Image (tube, each protein chain N blue to C red):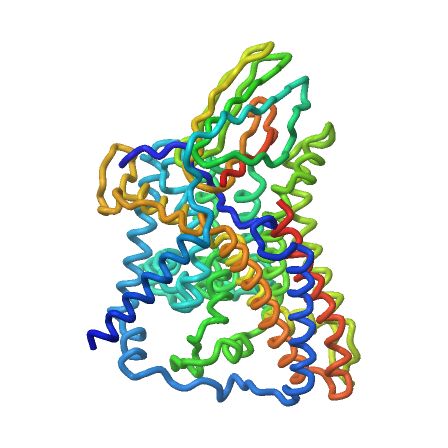
Length: 442
Length: 120
C-alpha cells in the first residue's frame, strides 16, 4: 500500500460551488415543496395505497431463493464472518486511524447501510449476528428464538432503538475520542452485551425494535421496492411500501434522532458554532451534547406540534397522529444522508476497502483491494456535488409531502384533510430551508 | 452496427471531455506557500473555528505564537500529522493536502478546533 499523506476526510460541494446563490437555491427548494403540495391537493384526492392489496408477488425464482434456508444461512455466515473480522481488528489491530474498524463502523455500516437497504431491503436483519447468536442459544436450550423469557413490552415500542441510535450519533459526532480504538471497542462491547441480553430476555422481536442498526436499516428499507404481504415477497412502488409500514410507539423518536443528528453534523462544523463553544464557557463535550440533544428534540417537537395541529373526527385520538405521520420523514432522512455523505461514502468508503485488506497493519493484502485508488471525482467536481445535494434534499421533501398527504386522506376527516396538512407543510418547508441553510453554511 | 458503435464511442468521448472541462481540475503550477498565523494564549486561540482556503498540493506553513508549549494535530486521512511547538514563536511545515476536501486542524492541548483547511 502506498502511503497517502494528508487526504481530507470530508469532500467539498459548499455554498460557493452552487451555480446559483445559496438564497436562490433555498428559495427554489422551498417553492418546489409548496408547489408539490398544491398539485397533490388538486390531483390526489383519494387514497391510493392499501397494504392488504398493494404490490405484486416477486418472481417465483427470486422468492424461492430469498426464502430458501441456504440463502438465509449464507447471509448469516456473511454477518458472522464480518463480526469475527471486526473483533479481530478491534483486539489485535493497531490503535491508529489506519485501522479499518473506524471506516467500517462510521462509513460502511452507518452511511453505506442506507443505499444497501434502499436497494436490497432489510439488510441488517438478514446479516445480523445477534439474531444468529440468539437462535443458537435458543436451540441449545430447546426454546424458540422468537420468544424470550418475557414478552416484549408493547409500550416500549422503538424507544430503545431511538436510544441506541442516539448513543451511536453521540460517539460519532460528539465524542472527541471517537477515533481511538479503546473508546470504540468499549462502545461496541456495550452494544454487544445489550443485544445478547436483550435477545435472551425478549427473543427476536427485541432486535426489530432495539438494535439501532436494524431499526435504521429496516426503516430505510421501507422506501425500497421490497415488501412482504402475508409473508409473501412482493414488489411495490416505494411510496406504497412506505405507506404499508406499521406504526410503533417511539417511531417519531427514531426519525427525530436520525434527522436531527444529520442536521447537527452540518451545524457543528460551522464557524459560528465552533467559535461559540470554544469561548470560555462550559466544556465543549457538554455543549456539543446539548446541541445534539437540542437538534433531535427540536425536530421531534416541530413535527409533533405540526401533526397534532389539525381538526380531528369524533373518537379520534390526537396523541396518535405524530406516530401516524412519522414515516413521512423517512424519505427526508434518506435525502439528507445522500446530501451529507455522498462524497464521504465514495471516498472514505473506498479508502476503508484499501485499509481493510491490511487488517492488522502489517502490510498484508488479504482481500486483494490494497492497490485500489480512491476516486476523488466528486471532490474535483464540487458544482456537480452541490447540485446533487440540493436535488437529494428537495426529492426527499417532496416524497415526504406525498407520503404525508396520502396518510392525511386516510386518517383525517374529509373537511380537515387539506387544512389539517397545512401545519405539516409549514414544518416541511421549515425543514427544507433549515436543512439546506445548514448544509451550505460551512 | 459499426455506425451505432462509433456514435456511442463519440458520445462517451464528448461526455468525458465535457465532464473534465466542467470541473475545476487539480490546480497545477507553482503556488506560493500558504502562511497561517496561529496565536495560543491561555485557553483561547486565534483563529478559532474559521475555514481557510488552500490549494491542492500547496505548501502550508503555520506560524505559532504561544505562551506555553503544546501540540497541534492535523486530522488528515489516513495518517494524522502531529506537531509539537514550544513557548514563543515557532514555524511548522504541514504536508500539502493531496486531494480537494476539508481537513480539521486542532489544538490537541486545548481540545479546540483552530481552523478547517478547505483544499480546492
